[in-house]
Amino acid sequence: VVIATALVNVYMSCHCPNNAKRVFDESVERDMVLWTIIITSYVQKGQGEVALKLFQQMIMEGALPNEFTYASALSACDGALQLENGKMIHSLVARSEFHGDIVLYNALVTMYGKCGTWEDAMAAFDESTERDKVTWNAIIGACAQHGHGKDALSYVQKMQQRGFFPDKLTYVSAFGACTNQLAMNEGKKNYTHILYVRDESSANIENALLNMYGRCGSVARAHLVFDGMRCRDVITWSAIIAAYAQHGLAENALDLASKMVEEGVIPNSITFVNMLSACGQVGLVKEGCDCFAKMRHFGVTPIMEHYNCLIDLLSRAGRLDEGEMLLKQLPGESS
RNA sequence: GGCGGAAUUUUAACGUCG
Image (cartoon, rainbow, N blue to C red; front, side, top):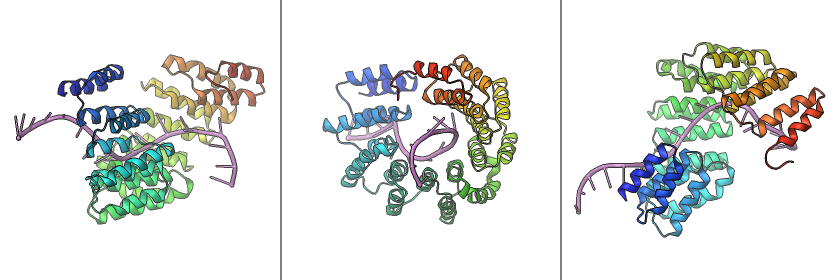
């Protein structure tokens, strides 16, 4: 069992899920650690549904999950579609010997933040008696999911009153909660907090801050953050391009895109959506088409979003025929 | 019988109605 477990672990971290799955399927003896590892691995690969299927299979086989397994299964629930699954796991936890476990409460807060309503998440938070930094970060993360900037700020203050220092994750979530016009002021208050911990500031926080300004209508401030950053990753570039795109400043967006490539950062699928929508805002047909053509050079295969941008761009320019040709190239079902 | 192996919180785009 131990060998199989180690193998699964290695295969999964080497991005060989098929090998991992094969070892898993072939192992006759499966203990909880093995189950937990395979479930966690699928969650980390973004395959939450597969993870949940495995969890169900495990239950069916009569195995008894422990607190580690429950935590993994809860983290596999992402999006409103998984709310029912999440609730089911919640009830299993409540009936188990692990109810009240702090890690599980943290996982529950997160799960309801992602899958449920704001009230659901708050209920789980209020119910928890023991709280650590993760609990606070989780509820602030739930604020971000639901766009509650004000609440995020008040939780940041409360956690400090209880003696917990906000960390990177706290601030990333708190800024994330402020990515709408209404919450902008709360975001600024957050920022005055963060000046004190700026020394440990990281790219993640600055990305979130940049994004907040971009989405709240202040390209100038977004760019200030951008200029002050030492290491800019794909997310940084995508966010600043999106900021310019949203304000109809397509030329700046495209300039930034070429600068990005010059600096050796590889644009990904999302970056291209941002660039294409920048072109779409102001009708830069030629640039948009060039952009679309370049995608493949970066190993990005066009998905629905890219096609939508381009078709929109072409049809606005009156080039319906070309738009229709693209429509026919669409992979999968049409609408 | 002992030991070791697993878990929970974070940032970028996205046509639907209000």
